[in-house]
Image (cartoon, rainbow, N blue to C red; front, side, top):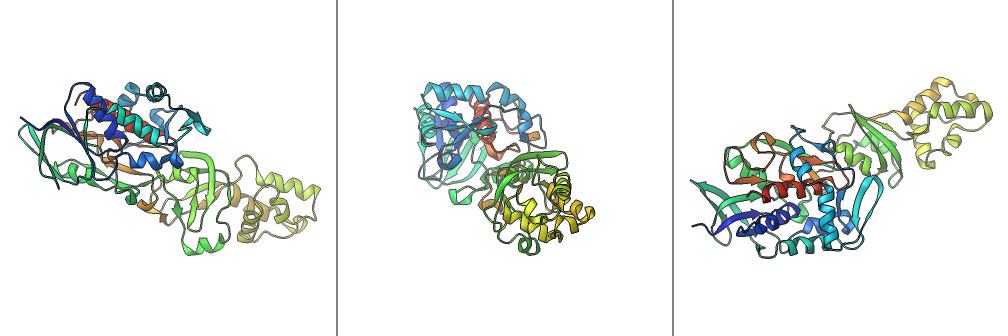
Length: 390
């Protein structure tokens, strides 16, 4: 006899959801977490209001070496299923831009809901898991409180993003200990940084924000862009960062709804004595207009400025080519891109093909959502897929 039918390691969004679902099926469930409280990443998410899903969720909102892997789980438990759960608990919510849904009140309402769903589950916090092993059909989970056995183990510990919350690479370590492949993880949804030379040219722009389009290969996003002391941030940069790799050059359009060359050419005819910088400051933040004209050396009067010079300036605004030197890394990354290779898992159950009874769910798997509630939806969906069978 084992101590439990299922041991779930990780008390975040995926772990709590899976525990509740498994318990409803009559399984004896132990949920372990190293923190004092469960659901800490939920608590701080969305500025404390939890962007818990997105109305426009599709498989196209996810990155993976196998883009089709997430389809099964997301179809069987989609955004409307989670919204139904939220409404059953009378949690008020609202929609923001791009279909993002947030609690009207605190994100702790989501945690309380999940804990209510887990009523009957044994939850043990402040427990460090030292390792997981399997002997024939029995799993042993070694902890600082002694060993515990089960018929099945679910790894729901996420990735090492936001280490101040106690996150780690535990999921990857367990996967490798069982001989599973791990797609090299890297920070995602993270601000990008520039070298000193570029930062010097952008000095004084920290805090300036505007709507922009950022393109990398065939991937394009249009949302708010924010200049920082280290480089660029804002939703549009966080989105593209999940696709960006060292050495990649981004194409940034700082005025996606304006053809800057046409605008300046018309002004050259109608207001020839105006300075280029002055005209540009009517369509760009003044400080940014100044930096861009200085950068390209195009800051005289329109009538004294050649079309070639205006074209150079315009291209620098409508198609700014910029190569970040890195990102702000795990410290501020909202997620990790990569993780346990989906080739190792069943897309229907999240079970390891070669190790019956071992499951990986949530962020630890090589499925990463866009910004806007998509990663929470993957947590709910993968947890449900697992909880219904574990």
